[in-house]
Image 1 (cartoon, rainbow, N blue to C red):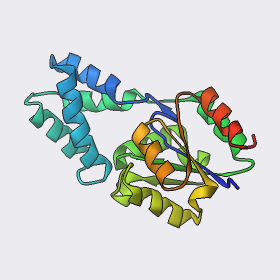
Image 2: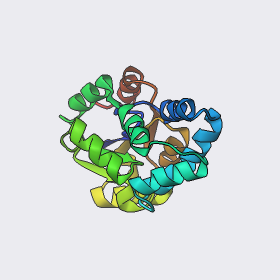
Image 3: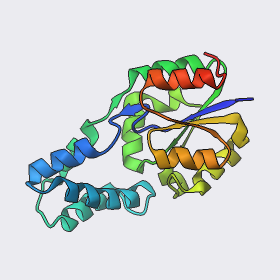
Image 4: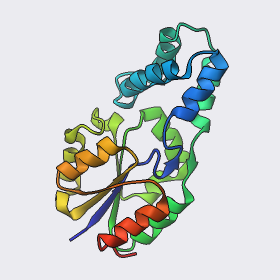
Length: 199
């Protein structure tokens, strides 16, 4: 019996689906090759999201590895400006809350999560939020899923996990959760109904 629905945040509850709009803006601003910027960004983002470095160190490392001089405050503003609430997902969560526990499992840095949480009231949307920066673990590492299950007291078979990244969905499925790849709110709601989830 399904008792909990677990959502990713970036790309599911909040758009955009990826950091491509950010790295695209950075590449344009710095007159650099987009793929190179994206690869370096991803590598340093991993360190930030598990709390190995802070926000200032993230932007310091980014400019150093890209070998450029850039206005770090401008880079920061671009990074924080791409996010917006996915209204369809927000409405779906509102309907699900009547019958299920609603959790979030997200790869987020401390500073980004704090900013987005304040702006969109994330703590009011979810019963509990599990982040990579708090656990020092990131999806698709099985340990972060196991940590969440332990903290919530849920069994894998009692959970539906929703994420926009294949590898995260695949890992949840291997651990015994019902796992759905998010494309949009309508498609996800249809797939949840097929699993017998009540709205």
